[in-house]
Length: 333
Image 1 (cartoon, rainbow, N blue to C red):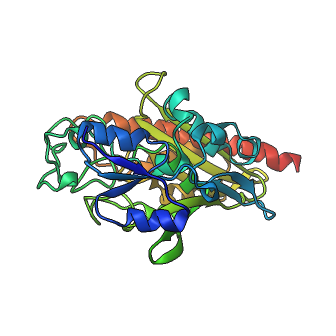
Image 2: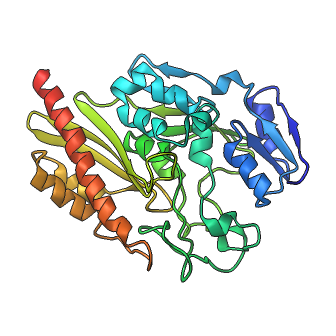
């Protein structure tokens, strides 16, 4: 690993100005940043330490019911926070299933959203793949067991975040501070497909920092779920994950948001499947029909067709799990 220095800014604006300089990057928990440095994939000379910036920390429930997550909040805090567990359970579950207890004590909300692809070609310092400035994605015709079945091309990485699908399912937004000022962007629009730019995974510009995530208050009667399939039950990256937020009105679904993870270069929302559920009873038959629609545009590579069936099953289970809880809650009000 090359030598680097760590500097501590006075405040968020100072951090932004420092990160905007050449060969500088932000570090908080440091899990992914240091991995990339050790592998030689990145050779950043200066890391700007965000951990002391109190303005980027904390979990707050606002008067209208919105949830604020500071970008420096640890994953274990998200997993165990009583308000999140009760009202935003998919977010709590997603954080709880990320990595290991040790990493959850280090990893932050912002870091989880901004981690780089886990593709072995990208992580290999000897492979000059498309994402690192090369002229090809080696997963095409190479080892592609864990790669994208939706939205791929010209790169076929999958987005590695556990939190992102759950946050997108709740319609969360990111507050961003940068040299150009402050802006807010919906997380659904924040992540970038390789067809937009194969070298990046999101909309962050030079010097910009995510300071907090705002999650809108869920509708009355809403229930949510996050589930994932892995090759082993101990620490592993998901093969497929699904987050669903369902609002039931009596015995029918009035609203649904379904987002898949680990199947595309971005959190993959399926609006056609959501519309199929509107006005329908949360039955096994309707959940199966929506799950079929959710996977209809899958385009697997030679070695990852198994993901299509897993995605279909998890979407069906997520719909039934969230919808049954939402219907029960509706009956009790």
